[in-house]
Figure (tube, rainbow, N blue to C red):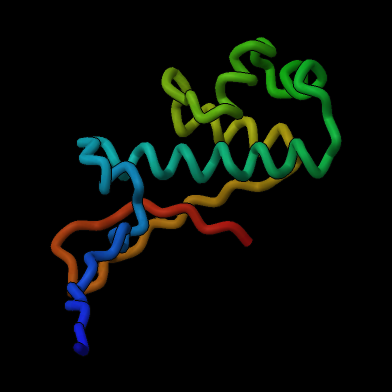
Amino acid sequence: MNRRKSVKAKKPDFEIGSGNVYADLGHADAADRLVKAQLVSMISEILSEQGLTQLKAAALLGIPQPKLSRLLRGQFRGFSERKLMDCLTRLGHDVQIIVRHAPKTRTQGAVSVVFS
């Protein structure tokens, strides 16, 4: 006797995200959190490239080492975008802010971080 197994369509175990994990998680301030996360990511990358210890990096950035440690672990509450940009300039990088019209496909503008 020939028995056929029925094959059910299996749902994928994942969803395609929006590009902003904070929005996908439902945070009201998702855009702000993403900008901060991108700035912190760049700070972390620069510190790594420069081979600085957290103690030396904290002194250079003008923040206590425990606060820098929290920042590098993604706990950036209490850090303004301005403070993060100041950290980047203290690390020898220019920060440029460009304001332009939003495309006609959107009714509101957006904030984004672009690294060159």
